Length: 311
Length: 236
Image (cartoon, rainbow over all chains, first blue to last red):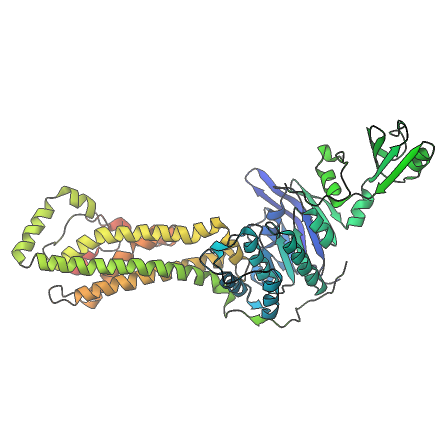
């Protein structure tokens, strides 16, 4: 494994008396697509600002491709492109002028790919920025970042304002970037997007990285959801080994099982179970589990994957 | 995980612009120069028109002496524009009138332009896009100041053109050096009142021997407080 694309050691940032980020230890390998999740104020944007050298850490250090984000900012910036969540652009410039300007900021552009991206994102670059909708402004930022084919894409909620079609175009572009060996650091609230794109997911809670790993790893550590429907009144399954939670709703029982499922299966076999559905937790459930009361998973009775959770 | 390890990007990318590290300076300079040029035109026009109005309205020395006496006893005008000094000469009138008004306008322009182009852009979040390029916060600060300098230069050049056009009139008879110095004093308030220039201005003011000239209301607007006022330079 070569130099990590991103490495942070004990990275912390304090604003006054508030800790925005606390001792972040993170390593992102080259070519990886990493999702970075957390509600508002969890420290996602602070992390990105520290990685970009736009803010000075209170403690710890951050590196991009082995380059110190504070001391070797220019060299680090040469290898990355950044898409902020707030699409704030120069209203008097046209879309193309803005793309050109942002290309000059990066210093290099794949012009053929730029034209392809303009077409893919269905952008009319001749219009003034002031005439664009929020989604169109976001497209400009995405095109400007992707067209420079950087080694690292730092995306801070990049699809806010994009319609579902454009979200597909975005996913296609990120997949292309991954196939080309580029690293993607994706901070997002859209869990389905992270689930679809990311190799690994990190979850921030109050400035601390509480969970990081592949979805498979995170699912393994989390509870399995079992939905059972009985012919008659359901038996008491709360005492069965492995059952963390049982919620009875008429003849229907929602169970969360940690560890081996055999004791539950044996218990169910002895009862008149009519329907049995077992599934792994979705990213949304994993995410919400981190944010339930005292970190405990809230009762979930929804479908396997809800599309969006925006906080 | 699908990872294709790369140390250096093997792609063919066209260079976009010659100096990626100076984009911010160019952005600020373009907008500051546009604004500076507009106000420079106004300043220059004001100098030409007002000076010619003085020359044509007060053709004789007696008329000018009468004007000087009238202004000398006008407390309100003195409070507003500073104590009159040699208003009975074209140069004295020009420096008293224009330094009193234009340097205040220049200061306001400097304050508003610097705030809009630096703090306003930062507040709008647009600077983050430029700071994510090949620059650092410190370099970006320097570039922003350089960009504002371009605006100041535009303001100075067009103000100087107005002063030189006026000075070429036989009735005025200002030398080129006087016109340039006069123009410097008119626009010098701008960098002093722009928040971004506070530090260098105060540093310069404390590096020398500050000696504010008490007789002029414009003394506090000079770039270094201890600069001599233009009235002395123009009227000898």
